[in-house]
Image 1 (cartoon, rainbow, N blue to C red):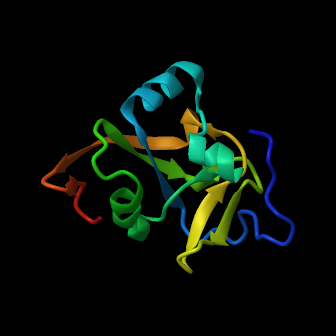
Image 2 (cartoon, rainbow, N blue to C red; image 1 turned 30 degrees about the horizontal axis):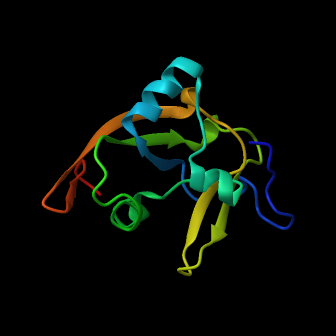
Length: 129
């Protein structure tokens, strides 16, 4: 993906959080481990950036965009390991600021990969989400 942050965004300074999250299908994570980076989803390609979430946004992102999908992964991403100026916090349609990555998501930036299961419409996440 060769998009760049829109002019006037803050880039990665100041970093609001040192950790952000990416949700993806398990097969895409396994492909990323082979290639060294997570390829953008069709929604990421359409919007020109990789969609990420803060810890507080993970459950909402799962329920809005991933309900009923199996084999998901929650990737913990260290923002300091992303390319300089590629992470921007931008307002979404919901009025919340979300982290958007304008560049590659290298597997070297992922500090943890957690399998997500859904049971009776509820996602099972680690404590704290």
